Length: 80
Image 1 (cartoon, rainbow, N blue to C red):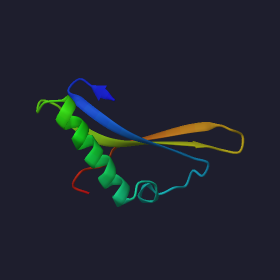
Image 2 (tube, rainbow, N blue to C red):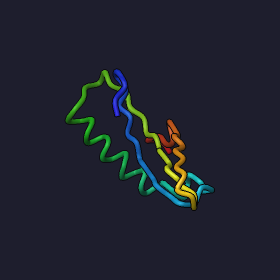
Image 3 (spheres, rainbow, N blue to C red):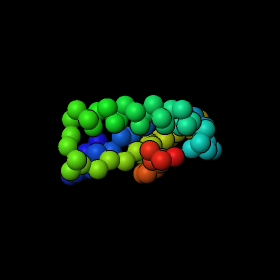
């Protein structure tokens, strides 16, 4: 996603279970892969005037198929 000069990399996770810890969703190894791919993308598609962040969108639904979307901006950083 892009908002003005900010590029947002969003990891979307869908789960039936609501009570999930973010650390269980995006393990450090997965974060590193996402960050690596994001840096590669940025090296080819942007210049230094862009900033970026990593968000997570958690989609859950209950037994009645009611959807809920929890959006977590700044879910992790390259320094994590």
